[in-house]
Amino acid sequence: MSTLVPFIDLSIIVPAYNEELRITPTLARLHGYLSAQPLRYEILVVDDGSRDGTCALIEKTAETMPNLRLVRQMPNRGKGAAVRLGMLAARGQIRVMCDADGSMPPEQLPALLAPIHACTAAVSIGSRYAPGAKTDVKQPMYRVLWSRLANKVIQRSLVPGVRDTQCGFKAFTAEAARDLFSVARIDGWAFDLEILALAKRRGYGVTEIGVEWSDDGRSRVNPLVDMWKVVREAVTIRRNLRHGVYDQIHALPARAAA
Image 1 (cartoon, rainbow, N blue to C red):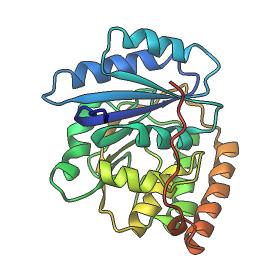
Image 2: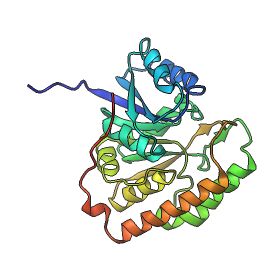
Image 3: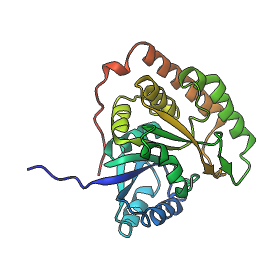
C-alpha cells in the first residue's frame, strides 16, 4: 500500500552545524512569517553532524512548531552535502535554502520567489550585489575581499554573469532541485558554484535578485583557509564538467537518519 505524501507549496532548507546558539531566532522568524501566509510549508533543518545540542534543540522546538522537521546527516560532511540532502528530502514544489544565522529576512521571500512564480526562471538566487540589494551594516573588509576575489578568480569561469554565487538564499523549482542536486558532488563551500554551473549547463533559467541582508559577526568563514578550499573545489567542478562526469550520474541516494 502506497503512502500519500501531503502536498507542500514551499520547503525551507536550513543547513546547521553546531548552531545551538544561533538557530532559534531564525526558526522563530521563519515560522512567524510563513504561518501568516496562505500556503502549506515545511522547514527542514539538516543537521550536519553537530557536536553540540543542535539536534535536541530542534526536536524540542518541533513540539510547538509542527511544520519543522529535523534531518540528520552523520558524520559531518559539509554545507554542500547538508543542503543537497535537504533538497532531496524536501517535499515542496519550491525549495529554498536559507542560512541558520538569519542573515536573510523571510520578508525577502516574495522577491526571491517572484521569478519562479512568473515562470521566468527555475532557479532564483539572492544577491548582495545585484540592483536592489540592501544591508543594515557594513560588511567586514576581509569578507568583502574574500567574496570579490572568489567572484573574479573563480565564478567567471563557471557561471559568467552572476554577481554573487555565495549568498545563502536560493530558490529552486522541485524539478530543478531534484535534477541538479541528485548529480551534485561537492560537499564544501563551492557547492553553490557547482549547482549554478550545472543549472546553466542544463538550460535552467537563473535569475539574480537583489535582497536585503545583514551580516552576522559570528561568521565562521576563514578567508585564507576557506578560499583555498573553494579554489580546489572549483578546479574539481571544471574538470567534472569538461569530462562529462555529471552526465554519467543519474542519482545519489539520500542518506538521512531520523
